[in-house]
Image (cartoon, rainbow, N blue to C red; front, side, top):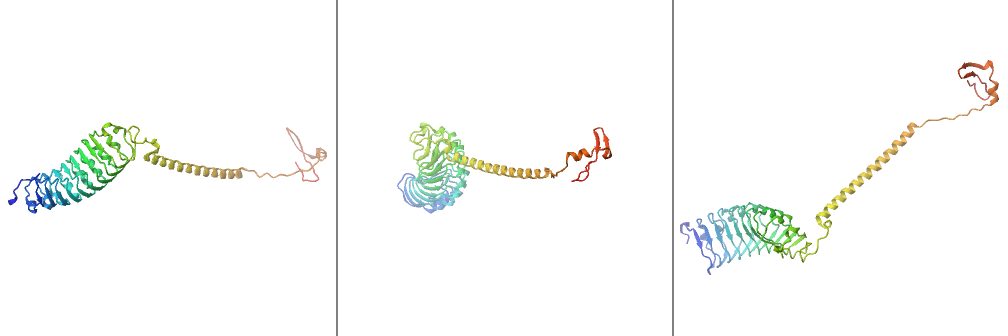
Length: 337
């Protein structure tokens, strides 16, 4: 069917074809559309099919295909639409898929894919739809997904994704549908999601905790948060009321930090006070020692008669404005002037 490699379209959808895709189709490098959906085809897809350089659409949906997407998909530079839903494809999503930079629509739902999403998925700048639901994907949702600014529909339900919901999803300006239900996501609902105008939001049946943002208290989101025992709300029925803010993990963390800082500051202050007090006492003691006088006491013993008997002209030794000065001779002491 692909003589000389000059076939442009292969359309065999909605039949009862069985068997495997012939490997020779991988040589049809001129193919723009490869559509074999809704048949009973099986086996693995030839590697060259994934990497058809001119293919804009590959539709293998609703068959019984198995095996992985090979790294050849990185060669599909023109590929815009990839439909693989409802098969038995397995294995990890190859990191080379981000090299298929023209991708607009990816539907891998209801297969057996596993492993994580390539961290560089944000390089798919033209991507508008990402359907991964009903697989065995695991690990965190890449934060780089928030760089796919053209995306409007994300469905990752029924996998085993874990970790927090990336706050970067709140920066997607055209996002209308976000379904992350039935995973193992944890942590709080990012406040950034409040800025989105979503027609559908489903975060149910995860392990989310903390308050539901007030801006998401809408009837349009009824059932969007069920199955998360750790969530709380002051308004939405079926959820326990939120404790005071002081009981939230973020606030408790801040309180503990402040208490530790205050304790350290108090200990430093007490240590400084004790040091200054001891230093002041030492200075005071030294000052008292330096300023004290060495007073020596002595006693004079004489009588009144001895003084009066000495007031004679021959004992006169001088005169002044205050009176005369006499020499007194004492028996028990030396002469006193």
